[in-house]
Amino acid sequence: MKEPYQKPSVRKLAQGSHNKYGSGNYYGRKVRTEIDGQTIAGLVERFGSPLFVYSERQIKEKLKELKTALTVRYPKVELAWSYKTNYLQAICALMHQGGSLAEVVSQMEYDKALGLGLKGKEIIFNGPYKPMDALETAFAQGAIVNLDHQDELSDCEQVATQLGRKLKVGLRLNLDAGIYPQWSRFGFNLESGQAWEAAKRIKAKGLLEVNGLHCHIGTYIMEPEAYGTATRKLLEFAAKLEAELGYKLDYLDLGGGFPSLSRLKGAVLPPEVSLPNLESYAETITSTMYRYLKPQSLPTLYLETGRALIDEAGYLITTLHASKRLLDGRKAYIADAGINLLYSAFWYRYNIEIEKEVTGVNEPSVIYGPLCMNIDVVDEGVLLPSLSRGTRLVLSPVGAYNQTQSMQFIGYRPNVVLVRENGTVDVIREKETLSDMESRECLPPDLKLH
Ligand SMILES: Cc1ncc(COP(=O)(O)O)c(C=O)c1O
Image (cartoon, rainbow, N blue to C red; front, top):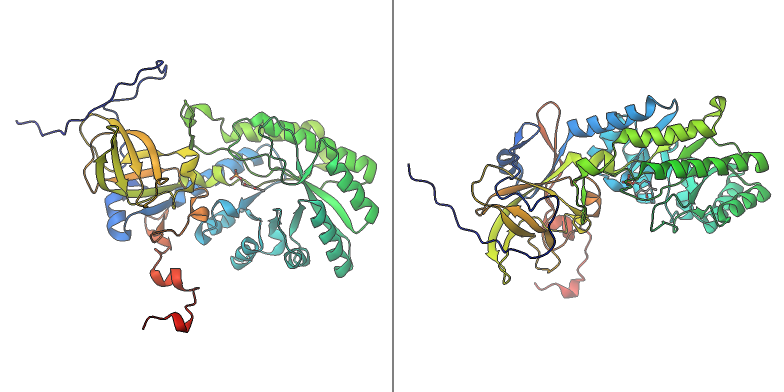
Protein backbone atom coordinates (compact mmCIF):
# COMPACT_ATOMS: atom_id res chain seq x y z
CA MET A 1 0.00 0.00 0.00
CA LYS A 2 1.21 3.46 -0.83
CA GLU A 3 2.20 5.50 2.23
CA PRO A 4 0.25 8.77 2.59
CA TYR A 5 2.19 11.86 1.69
CA GLN A 6 3.65 13.70 4.63
CA LYS A 7 4.65 17.29 4.34
CA PRO A 8 8.36 17.66 5.17
CA SER A 9 9.27 19.90 8.05
CA VAL A 10 12.46 21.67 8.97
CA ARG A 11 13.74 21.83 12.51
CA LYS A 12 16.57 24.15 13.32
CA LEU A 13 19.18 22.63 15.60
CA ALA A 14 19.87 25.13 18.36
CA GLN A 15 23.22 25.13 20.05
CA GLY A 16 23.40 25.52 23.77
CA SER A 17 23.27 23.55 26.97
CA HIS A 18 21.46 20.25 26.99
CA ASN A 19 18.06 20.20 28.52
CA LYS A 20 18.12 17.41 31.08
CA TYR A 21 14.38 16.92 30.72
CA GLY A 22 14.72 15.90 27.08
CA SER A 23 14.76 17.70 23.80
CA GLY A 24 11.08 17.41 23.04
CA ASN A 25 9.14 14.63 21.51
CA TYR A 26 9.31 14.33 17.75
CA TYR A 27 6.25 12.17 17.35
CA GLY A 28 4.34 12.35 20.63
CA ARG A 29 1.42 14.72 20.71
CA LYS A 30 -1.67 15.26 22.68
CA VAL A 31 -5.02 14.46 21.18
CA ARG A 32 -8.40 15.36 22.65
CA THR A 33 -11.43 14.29 20.70
CA GLU A 34 -14.05 15.21 23.27
CA ILE A 35 -14.92 17.04 26.47
CA ASP A 36 -17.13 15.06 28.83
CA GLY A 37 -18.57 13.01 25.99
CA GLN A 38 -19.13 15.93 23.61
CA THR A 39 -16.97 15.70 20.50
CA ILE A 40 -14.91 18.74 19.60
CA ALA A 41 -16.26 18.62 16.06
CA GLY A 42 -19.85 18.38 17.30
CA LEU A 43 -19.42 21.28 19.72
CA VAL A 44 -18.00 23.53 16.99
CA GLU A 45 -20.71 22.49 14.55
CA ARG A 46 -23.39 23.56 17.03
CA PHE A 47 -21.81 26.55 18.72
CA GLY A 48 -19.09 27.82 16.39
CA SER A 49 -15.40 28.48 16.85
CA PRO A 50 -13.73 29.75 18.89
CA LEU A 51 -15.69 28.31 21.76
CA PHE A 52 -15.22 28.32 25.51
CA VAL A 53 -16.37 25.07 27.07
CA TYR A 54 -16.87 24.44 30.79
CA SER A 55 -17.38 21.07 32.41
CA GLU A 56 -20.01 20.93 35.16
CA ARG A 57 -18.58 17.60 36.28
CA GLN A 58 -15.10 19.02 36.76
CA ILE A 59 -16.34 22.09 38.60
CA LYS A 60 -18.27 19.95 41.05
CA GLU A 61 -15.43 17.50 41.50
CA LYS A 62 -12.90 20.22 42.30
CA LEU A 63 -15.23 21.97 44.71
CA LYS A 64 -15.84 18.69 46.48
CA GLU A 65 -12.10 17.94 46.60
CA LEU A 66 -11.30 21.26 48.28
CA LYS A 67 -14.26 21.13 50.64
CA THR A 68 -13.42 17.61 51.71
CA ALA A 69 -9.75 18.46 52.23
CA LEU A 70 -10.80 21.26 54.60
CA THR A 71 -13.86 19.89 56.35
CA VAL A 72 -12.23 16.60 57.37
CA ARG A 73 -9.61 18.68 59.14
CA TYR A 74 -11.49 21.64 60.60
CA PRO A 75 -15.09 21.95 61.82
CA LYS A 76 -15.92 25.50 60.79
CA VAL A 77 -15.00 26.14 57.15
CA GLU A 78 -16.72 28.31 54.55
CA LEU A 79 -15.65 28.75 50.94
CA ALA A 80 -16.44 32.08 49.32
CA TRP A 81 -16.38 32.06 45.53
CA SER A 82 -14.02 34.74 44.24
CA TYR A 83 -16.23 36.48 41.69
CA LYS A 84 -13.44 38.14 39.77
CA THR A 85 -11.99 34.73 38.87
CA ASN A 86 -15.09 34.00 36.82
CA TYR A 87 -18.42 35.72 37.30
CA LEU A 88 -20.46 34.11 34.59
CA GLN A 89 -23.83 33.61 36.25
CA ALA A 90 -23.89 29.87 35.60
CA ILE A 91 -20.43 29.40 37.11
CA CYS A 92 -21.28 31.45 40.23
CA ALA A 93 -24.58 29.60 40.57
CA LEU A 94 -22.82 26.22 40.47
CA MET A 95 -20.44 27.41 43.20
CA HIS A 96 -23.32 28.71 45.33
CA GLN A 97 -25.37 25.55 44.82
CA GLY A 98 -22.27 23.73 46.02
CA GLY A 99 -22.44 25.72 49.27
CA SER A 100 -20.03 28.58 48.57
CA LEU A 101 -20.60 32.14 49.71
CA ALA A 102 -19.56 35.05 47.44
CA GLU A 103 -16.35 37.06 47.68
CA VAL A 104 -16.67 40.35 45.84
CA VAL A 105 -14.41 43.34 45.31
CA SER A 106 -16.73 45.93 43.80
CA GLN A 107 -20.26 47.24 43.84
CA MET A 108 -20.83 45.53 40.48
CA GLU A 109 -19.79 42.14 41.83
CA TYR A 110 -21.86 42.75 44.97
CA ASP A 111 -24.90 43.48 42.80
CA LYS A 112 -24.25 40.32 40.78
CA ALA A 113 -24.23 38.22 43.95
CA LEU A 114 -27.51 39.77 45.13
CA GLY A 115 -28.93 39.23 41.64
CA LEU A 116 -28.19 35.53 41.92
CA GLY A 117 -30.21 35.41 45.14
CA LEU A 118 -27.57 35.68 47.84
CA LYS A 119 -28.27 37.58 51.04
CA GLY A 120 -25.91 40.30 52.27
CA LYS A 121 -24.67 38.05 55.06
CA GLU A 122 -23.55 35.51 52.46
CA ILE A 123 -21.20 38.04 50.86
CA ILE A 124 -17.62 38.92 51.79
CA PHE A 125 -16.77 42.40 50.56
CA ASN A 126 -13.05 42.98 49.91
CA GLY A 127 -11.01 45.31 47.76
CA PRO A 128 -9.39 48.73 47.96
CA TYR A 129 -12.29 50.67 46.48
CA LYS A 130 -15.58 50.58 48.31
CA PRO A 131 -17.47 53.83 47.79
CA MET A 132 -19.58 55.17 50.67
CA ASP A 133 -22.91 54.02 49.26
CA ALA A 134 -21.49 50.53 48.66
CA LEU A 135 -20.34 50.41 52.30
CA GLU A 136 -23.70 51.65 53.55
CA THR A 137 -25.54 48.92 51.62
CA ALA A 138 -23.09 46.22 52.66
CA PHE A 139 -23.36 47.03 56.38
CA ALA A 140 -27.11 47.51 56.24
CA GLN A 141 -27.42 44.07 54.62
CA GLY A 142 -25.06 42.33 57.05
CA ALA A 143 -22.19 41.58 54.64
CA ILE A 144 -18.72 40.76 55.96
CA VAL A 145 -16.53 43.78 55.21
CA ASN A 146 -12.75 43.52 55.30
CA LEU A 147 -11.08 46.92 55.54
CA ASP A 148 -8.26 47.78 53.20
CA HIS A 149 -6.90 51.14 54.37
CA GLN A 150 -7.14 53.98 56.82
CA ASP A 151 -9.51 56.13 54.76
CA GLU A 152 -11.91 53.23 54.46
CA LEU A 153 -11.73 52.81 58.20
CA SER A 154 -12.88 56.43 58.60
CA ASP A 155 -15.66 55.85 56.04
CA CYS A 156 -16.89 52.85 58.03
CA GLU A 157 -16.91 54.90 61.24
CA GLN A 158 -19.08 57.42 59.43
CA VAL A 159 -21.46 54.65 58.35
CA ALA A 160 -21.59 53.39 61.95
CA THR A 161 -22.53 56.88 63.11
CA GLN A 162 -25.26 57.12 60.43
CA LEU A 163 -26.66 53.69 61.31
CA GLY A 164 -26.41 54.46 65.02
CA ARG A 165 -24.77 51.17 65.93
CA LYS A 166 -21.36 49.62 66.37
CA LEU A 167 -20.24 47.78 63.24
CA LYS A 168 -18.17 44.62 63.11
CA VAL A 169 -15.31 44.75 60.62
CA GLY A 170 -12.46 42.56 59.45
CA LEU A 171 -8.98 43.92 58.90
CA ARG A 172 -7.11 42.94 55.78
CA LEU A 173 -3.43 42.49 56.59
CA ASN A 174 -0.42 42.19 54.35
CA LEU A 175 2.58 40.40 55.76
CA ASP A 176 5.79 38.61 54.96
CA ALA A 177 4.87 34.99 54.38
CA GLY A 178 8.05 34.22 52.45
CA ILE A 179 6.49 35.01 49.07
CA TYR A 180 8.42 37.57 47.08
CA PRO A 181 7.84 40.12 45.74
CA GLN A 182 5.64 40.65 48.76
CA TRP A 183 2.24 42.16 48.07
CA SER A 184 1.98 45.21 50.27
CA ARG A 185 -0.54 47.38 48.48
CA PHE A 186 -3.66 45.76 49.94
CA GLY A 187 -4.58 45.99 53.58
CA PHE A 188 -2.64 47.13 56.63
CA ASN A 189 0.93 45.98 57.02
CA LEU A 190 1.58 43.70 59.94
CA GLU A 191 5.32 43.90 60.51
CA SER A 192 5.54 47.70 60.35
CA GLY A 193 2.94 48.10 63.08
CA GLN A 194 0.41 49.70 60.71
CA ALA A 195 -2.19 47.02 61.43
CA TRP A 196 -1.77 47.40 65.18
CA GLU A 197 -2.13 51.18 64.92
CA ALA A 198 -5.36 50.72 62.96
CA ALA A 199 -6.74 48.35 65.59
CA LYS A 200 -5.85 50.74 68.42
CA ARG A 201 -7.52 53.61 66.59
CA ILE A 202 -10.66 51.52 66.12
CA LYS A 203 -10.70 50.77 69.83
CA ALA A 204 -10.14 54.41 70.77
CA LYS A 205 -13.03 55.64 68.61
CA GLY A 206 -15.35 52.85 69.69
CA LEU A 207 -17.53 52.96 66.58
CA LEU A 208 -16.29 49.71 65.07
CA GLU A 209 -15.25 46.36 66.44
CA VAL A 210 -12.65 44.04 64.87
CA ASN A 211 -14.03 40.52 64.63
CA GLY A 212 -12.08 39.09 61.70
CA LEU A 213 -8.70 39.05 60.00
CA HIS A 214 -8.12 38.67 56.29
CA CYS A 215 -5.02 38.06 54.23
CA HIS A 216 -4.50 37.17 50.56
CA ILE A 217 -0.79 36.54 50.06
CA GLY A 218 -0.94 36.35 46.27
CA THR A 219 -1.98 34.04 43.48
CA TYR A 220 -0.52 30.76 42.18
CA ILE A 221 1.31 30.24 45.48
CA MET A 222 3.33 27.06 45.07
CA GLU A 223 4.37 26.83 48.72
CA PRO A 224 1.82 25.51 51.24
CA GLU A 225 4.22 26.61 53.99
CA ALA A 226 3.55 30.26 53.08
CA TYR A 227 -0.02 29.72 54.30
CA GLY A 228 1.38 28.21 57.49
CA THR A 229 3.43 31.37 58.06
CA ALA A 230 0.50 33.67 57.24
CA THR A 231 -1.83 31.72 59.54
CA ARG A 232 0.66 31.82 62.39
CA LYS A 233 1.25 35.56 62.04
CA LEU A 234 -2.47 36.31 61.82
CA LEU A 235 -3.22 34.22 64.88
CA GLU A 236 -0.42 35.84 66.88
CA PHE A 237 -1.91 39.19 65.94
CA ALA A 238 -5.37 37.91 66.93
CA ALA A 239 -4.03 36.86 70.33
CA LYS A 240 -2.67 40.38 70.85
CA LEU A 241 -5.99 41.90 69.74
CA GLU A 242 -7.79 39.81 72.33
CA ALA A 243 -5.31 40.31 75.16
CA GLU A 244 -4.81 44.05 74.77
CA LEU A 245 -7.98 45.33 73.11
CA GLY A 246 -10.53 42.69 74.03
CA TYR A 247 -11.44 41.83 70.41
CA LYS A 248 -12.35 38.20 69.83
CA LEU A 249 -11.89 36.67 66.42
CA ASP A 250 -15.05 35.29 64.78
CA TYR A 251 -13.28 34.46 61.55
CA LEU A 252 -9.95 34.06 59.87
CA ASP A 253 -10.02 34.61 56.11
CA LEU A 254 -6.97 33.38 54.23
CA GLY A 255 -8.05 34.67 50.81
CA GLY A 256 -7.27 32.69 47.67
CA GLY A 257 -4.05 31.82 45.90
CA PHE A 258 -3.87 28.04 45.57
CA PRO A 259 -2.41 27.16 42.17
CA SER A 260 -4.23 25.45 39.33
CA LEU A 261 -2.60 23.13 36.82
CA SER A 262 -1.64 26.06 34.60
CA ARG A 263 1.96 25.98 33.50
CA LEU A 264 3.80 29.15 34.40
CA LYS A 265 5.98 30.46 31.59
CA GLY A 266 9.56 29.48 32.28
CA ALA A 267 8.60 26.54 34.49
CA VAL A 268 10.63 23.46 33.61
CA LEU A 269 8.54 20.76 35.19
CA PRO A 270 4.90 20.23 34.31
CA PRO A 271 2.48 21.47 36.98
CA GLU A 272 1.24 17.93 37.67
CA VAL A 273 4.74 17.20 38.95
CA SER A 274 5.76 20.46 40.55
CA LEU A 275 2.62 21.52 42.40
CA PRO A 276 1.49 20.34 45.83
CA ASN A 277 -2.08 19.06 46.02
CA LEU A 278 -4.94 20.88 47.75
CA GLU A 279 -4.65 18.57 50.75
CA SER A 280 -1.17 19.91 51.52
CA TYR A 281 -2.53 23.45 51.74
CA ALA A 282 -5.46 22.36 53.88
CA GLU A 283 -3.17 20.40 56.19
CA THR A 284 -0.71 23.26 56.67
CA ILE A 285 -3.42 25.81 57.39
CA THR A 286 -5.49 23.73 59.76
CA SER A 287 -2.58 22.20 61.68
CA THR A 288 -1.22 25.71 62.28
CA MET A 289 -4.65 26.82 63.49
CA TYR A 290 -4.81 23.98 66.03
CA ARG A 291 -1.36 24.89 67.28
CA TYR A 292 -2.42 28.46 68.08
CA LEU A 293 -6.09 28.16 69.06
CA LYS A 294 -8.04 26.69 71.92
CA PRO A 295 -10.55 24.00 70.83
CA GLN A 296 -13.43 25.83 72.55
CA SER A 297 -12.85 29.06 70.61
CA LEU A 298 -12.21 28.14 67.00
CA PRO A 299 -12.99 30.94 64.53
CA THR A 300 -14.63 30.22 61.18
CA LEU A 301 -12.05 29.65 58.49
CA TYR A 302 -12.92 31.35 55.21
CA LEU A 303 -11.12 30.63 51.97
CA GLU A 304 -11.71 32.65 48.83
CA THR A 305 -10.21 30.12 46.43
CA GLY A 306 -10.66 31.14 42.79
CA ARG A 307 -8.20 29.82 40.22
CA ALA A 308 -7.73 26.35 41.71
CA LEU A 309 -11.47 25.67 41.60
CA ILE A 310 -12.30 26.72 38.06
CA ASP A 311 -9.22 26.84 35.85
CA GLU A 312 -9.09 23.19 34.79
CA ALA A 313 -12.83 23.02 34.13
CA GLY A 314 -12.47 25.55 31.30
CA TYR A 315 -11.33 24.81 27.72
CA LEU A 316 -11.05 26.93 24.62
CA ILE A 317 -11.55 25.36 21.21
CA THR A 318 -9.86 27.29 18.46
CA THR A 319 -9.62 26.58 14.71
CA LEU A 320 -6.49 27.05 12.64
CA HIS A 321 -7.30 29.51 9.92
CA ALA A 322 -3.96 29.53 8.09
CA SER A 323 -0.29 28.72 8.38
CA LYS A 324 2.86 30.45 7.23
CA ARG A 325 6.64 30.33 7.50
CA LEU A 326 8.28 33.13 9.38
CA LEU A 327 11.46 34.72 8.15
CA ASP A 328 13.51 32.79 10.71
CA GLY A 329 12.13 29.51 9.40
CA ARG A 330 9.64 28.86 12.18
CA LYS A 331 6.24 27.47 11.41
CA ALA A 332 3.39 29.72 12.44
CA TYR A 333 -0.37 29.24 12.61
CA ILE A 334 -3.10 31.83 12.72
CA ALA A 335 -5.87 30.66 15.02
CA ASP A 336 -9.32 32.19 15.40
CA ALA A 337 -8.83 32.90 19.13
CA GLY A 338 -6.42 35.53 20.36
CA ILE A 339 -5.14 37.08 23.52
CA ASN A 340 -8.16 39.35 23.81
CA LEU A 341 -9.90 36.13 24.96
CA LEU A 342 -6.87 34.69 26.72
CA TYR A 343 -5.59 37.20 29.19
CA SER A 344 -3.77 34.42 31.02
CA ALA A 345 -1.54 33.80 27.95
CA PHE A 346 0.79 36.49 29.25
CA TRP A 347 1.80 34.33 32.24
CA TYR A 348 0.88 30.75 31.43
CA ARG A 349 1.45 28.22 28.65
CA TYR A 350 -1.57 26.18 27.76
CA ASN A 351 -1.88 22.50 27.33
CA ILE A 352 -2.50 22.32 23.58
CA GLU A 353 -4.32 19.29 22.25
CA ILE A 354 -5.26 18.42 18.67
CA GLU A 355 -8.80 17.26 17.97
CA LYS A 356 -7.62 14.14 16.09
CA GLU A 357 -4.58 11.95 15.43
CA VAL A 358 -2.23 13.54 12.93
CA THR A 359 0.85 11.88 11.46
CA GLY A 360 4.19 13.55 10.86
CA VAL A 361 7.11 14.94 12.74
CA ASN A 362 6.66 17.67 15.32
CA GLU A 363 8.29 21.02 14.88
CA PRO A 364 8.26 24.08 17.11
CA SER A 365 5.29 26.16 16.03
CA VAL A 366 4.06 29.59 16.97
CA ILE A 367 0.35 30.10 17.42
CA TYR A 368 -0.89 33.57 16.68
CA GLY A 369 -4.39 34.83 17.25
CA PRO A 370 -6.52 36.63 14.67
CA LEU A 371 -5.86 40.15 15.90
CA CYS A 372 -3.90 42.52 13.70
CA MET A 373 -1.56 43.20 16.63
CA ASN A 374 1.99 42.03 17.11
CA ILE A 375 1.36 41.03 20.72
CA ASP A 376 -1.34 38.54 19.77
CA VAL A 377 0.69 35.39 20.51
CA VAL A 378 -1.11 32.45 22.06
CA ASP A 379 1.97 30.21 22.22
CA GLU A 380 5.53 31.04 21.25
CA GLY A 381 6.73 27.57 20.42
CA VAL A 382 4.68 24.44 20.88
CA LEU A 383 5.73 21.17 19.25
CA LEU A 384 3.13 20.33 16.64
CA PRO A 385 3.06 18.22 13.49
CA SER A 386 2.12 19.92 10.26
CA LEU A 387 -1.55 20.80 10.65
CA SER A 388 -3.95 21.60 7.86
CA ARG A 389 -6.30 24.56 7.73
CA GLY A 390 -9.43 23.99 9.73
CA THR A 391 -7.76 21.75 12.34
CA ARG A 392 -9.10 22.45 15.79
CA LEU A 393 -6.99 22.76 18.90
CA VAL A 394 -8.17 22.55 22.48
CA LEU A 395 -6.42 24.87 24.91
CA SER A 396 -6.57 24.34 28.66
CA PRO A 397 -6.76 25.23 31.46
CA VAL A 398 -8.46 28.53 30.68
CA GLY A 399 -11.30 28.66 33.21
CA ALA A 400 -9.80 31.27 35.56
CA TYR A 401 -9.68 34.99 34.87
CA ASN A 402 -10.05 34.75 31.08
CA GLN A 403 -13.81 35.27 30.99
CA THR A 404 -13.77 38.20 33.37
CA GLN A 405 -10.75 39.85 31.80
CA SER A 406 -11.51 39.06 28.18
CA MET A 407 -11.66 42.17 26.10
CA GLN A 408 -14.03 43.11 23.34
CA PHE A 409 -11.45 44.00 20.72
CA ILE A 410 -11.48 43.76 16.94
CA GLY A 411 -13.90 40.82 16.86
CA TYR A 412 -16.88 39.41 18.70
CA ARG A 413 -16.41 37.42 21.85
CA PRO A 414 -17.55 33.82 21.27
CA ASN A 415 -20.16 31.55 22.75
CA VAL A 416 -19.48 30.00 26.13
CA VAL A 417 -21.09 26.65 26.84
CA LEU A 418 -21.43 24.39 29.85
CA VAL A 419 -21.37 20.64 29.32
CA ARG A 420 -23.85 19.40 31.86
CA GLU A 421 -23.53 16.25 33.93
CA ASN A 422 -26.66 14.88 32.25
CA GLY A 423 -24.94 14.96 28.86
CA THR A 424 -26.62 18.09 27.48
CA VAL A 425 -24.90 21.34 26.58
CA ASP A 426 -26.16 24.79 27.61
CA VAL A 427 -25.04 28.11 26.21
CA ILE A 428 -24.11 30.19 29.26
CA ARG A 429 -22.99 33.29 27.36
CA GLU A 430 -24.01 34.03 23.83
CA LYS A 431 -21.62 35.21 21.17
CA GLU A 432 -21.61 38.98 20.95
CA THR A 433 -23.27 40.84 18.14
CA LEU A 434 -22.64 44.27 16.70
CA SER A 435 -25.73 45.58 18.45
CA ASP A 436 -24.47 44.29 21.84
CA MET A 437 -21.27 46.18 21.30
CA GLU A 438 -22.96 49.36 20.18
CA SER A 439 -25.91 49.28 22.53
CA ARG A 440 -24.40 51.84 24.91
CA GLU A 441 -23.06 54.15 22.22
CA CYS A 442 -24.85 57.32 21.24
CA LEU A 443 -24.29 58.87 17.84
CA PRO A 444 -25.13 62.60 17.93
CA PRO A 445 -27.80 63.25 15.27
CA ASP A 446 -25.62 65.66 13.32
CA LEU A 447 -22.99 62.94 12.88
CA LYS A 448 -25.36 60.50 11.22
CA LEU A 449 -24.36 59.91 7.63
CA HIS A 450 -27.85 59.32 6.24
C1 LIG B 1 -8.98 39.21 47.98
C2 LIG B 1 -8.87 38.07 47.02
N1 LIG B 1 -9.42 36.89 47.36
C3 LIG B 1 -9.37 35.83 46.52
C4 LIG B 1 -8.76 35.91 45.29
C5 LIG B 1 -8.72 34.70 44.40
O1 LIG B 1 -7.41 34.29 44.21
P1 LIG B 1 -7.02 32.96 43.43
O2 LIG B 1 -7.73 32.97 42.13
O3 LIG B 1 -5.54 33.04 43.28
O4 LIG B 1 -7.45 31.80 44.29
C6 LIG B 1 -8.17 37.12 44.90
C7 LIG B 1 -7.50 37.25 43.61
O5 LIG B 1 -6.70 38.10 43.32
C8 LIG B 1 -8.23 38.24 45.80
O6 LIG B 1 -7.70 39.42 45.48
